[in-house]
Length: 386
Length: 161
Image 1 (tube, chains in turn cyan, yellow):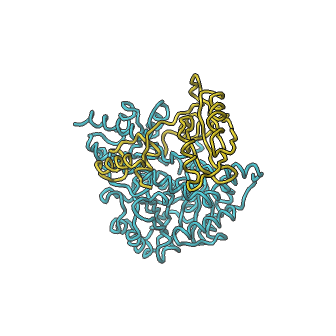
Image 2 (cartoon, chains in turn red, yellow):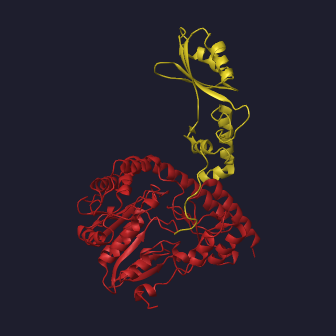
Image 3 (cartoon, each protein chain N blue to C red):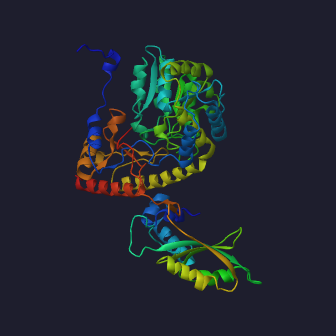
């Protein structure tokens, strides 16, 4: 057959751990700590709002930008929570999750040869999406600094071709986040070089040790920031696919151009439900956060106790421990743990080739299961002690 | 509310060691706190929530919600009369409420006759009880925040980024 596949897509590396994923999916009775989404179902008031909107016959397209009442609610939320305001008319775009936001942002700004900085390990899509948009991803290894991007490390990777950075905090897969002071230092350097900061702050409501600082709320940062957020994690709404992008109107307009031709608009049911989330679900969000925090303390304590060294993540629901002590690399560890103890974790290499020593553990799992999984991991580690 | 109580109210089987780890407290402190709560009657007892809609026990019990109208006693208000009523083992819950009646009871019995007999022979004839309305419960959907249906399975795909 003729090869119809584009050279760009053909050159994209398939994920090295696809086979491992298939293995997990094909196995029964596995306790999975490999899930990148909340274990809570969407709070009832939000689901109910979705159902009601269907009953009332809200089944049409919406404005390309998203429902005005949702954009108003987003602005209201950002103002009250982080003290930043965006005009619902031309600075907010409702997207199909943050994923679409990242894609639109990159396609809207990239010229061939432009570079995008990506602190590593990172969420899997940033690099490939940069390549698809015709840009060059520049990966910044953060292993030496407990997976945190430091000002010095950042400076080393900037050159005249650097157009933007994708900063994700709290981060998937490490749970690392940044204090206001740390962000200030990064901001100074980035703004100094007029680098566009694409910030993926989808886990912002799950920050445990200090108050989350939205990047655009830093003095002088707003015009250099494209702020991405959504409903998936804080409101346990992953399957609804609703996110949003806020930023300078020129960038939002460019993104809207692509969005109107490719997506048209986010499904109206999801937008109506998301509105309800912003209006009435703050207690539900707070309750989920408290529960995650307790699990975090338990999981990190337990991991370090059984010898899998792990820093304390400040947010999200992930831990990224090192399995080096067992003499295995992350992939072997994950494979053996799956076959011997039926516990699934994600090998660190899923988030960057260098992270062979680590695994990602998601504690978005009920406490009983979490406890049992950690018990099995302890047994596993003890058995393989060398 | 203290976080220890919050955790135990959700799941009484979480051990003091686990609570200590979750809340970054010392195990000995957690144990001491729980002891104190038990002593002070803050924690009254630990029990399982059983879904009786699934376990079809023989001699299945019957429950009724009973509205009770009272004549308050001088100086004592409702408390003294309420005590005489809730002391009956048939009464599993008792609330003083606002509105058209005064006490709301949940009464349990082996069958409909047992409950009826309790109402007609014990409750109604009591001095200060002006009237009662009995509602037999037909089906229970939710109790104390727990929905009484088959456990929901985890519908998420087992592994994702």
